[in-house]
Length: 224
Image (cartoon, one colour):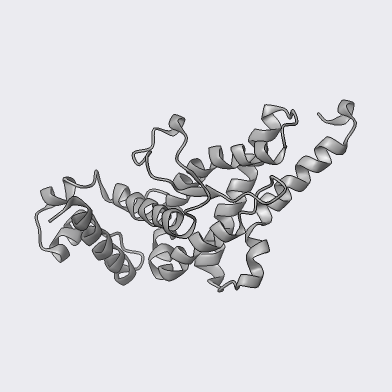
């Protein structure tokens, strides 16, 4: 059996176990028992359970990028992250006719994966007694996206000079907001957003562009 197929078997089985187990952490023993293999077989494919969780997430995003946005600009992890799946695109830039970014369709499409597996992700994101049962996937996601959102901010600046600390703040602030909104979408409301709400999915970038426009509208002496 191919490596991709075996990884997929572990992934699908793990997701089912997480949904069944609720707040109880699923172990390698639980997983390999359900699959019907030895633990050493699991470790041929993944470092640990957290690596599997990240693989599931990144494999889904790669599929979103390659199947739904084949004509747009794919984005891979920044080299500084040393990401294990560095060759896999996780994000895409959708340029509008003015050279700006229209990211709504991407965020809506990627959120569709979370919505389709909302019971799984609700348990993965669950924080119990101030302890994260799995290594924080949300924190991994935040670190993954910050360099990409930082580059988005530079694109939205349209070549104008802006202090690095301002760009860094925008990237951190809006990436954190995107991840928190996703958390609320999955764990608190889980409301389906329609095609009419695409602009709302682009809100972080809309707000970032407005902030940049306000910044450049100020006299130079007041910008800092």
